[in-house]
Image (tube, one colour):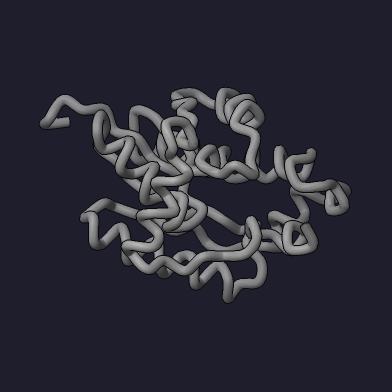
Length: 176
């Protein structure tokens, strides 16, 4: 912490959501990124989103960690909740799954805090994300959609020519 800024590890779901979140965090923190998304289906979709994220991290000179893709493990974690609607219990479990992994990496890499880009989406309930995140030490509950955060993410997506997905990530969100 040579510049006296705290270090925050940002769980990222895609470059679209990450760009505006990163921009906001860099005002006050040193930022690292964690692309942790075994929920994304199919693996080709995971790879496209991951590639965009890696390229953006490189462009911004921000360290990034990429989790192994283990969709079967994620499916096992949400088993029994496959038919839940978007914003339902399946989503809560998905947040729990990814935030637990992010908390673990943040601690292992000596980050002061961790948070997630998921709050930038108008399709996610930030309160639920905060409830799950606050189960772990050092979670930063920041709602990135505030102050036109989602609009800013759309603008940055266009400027950077990011791939724009048509669904949240899992196969169950495709139907919605």
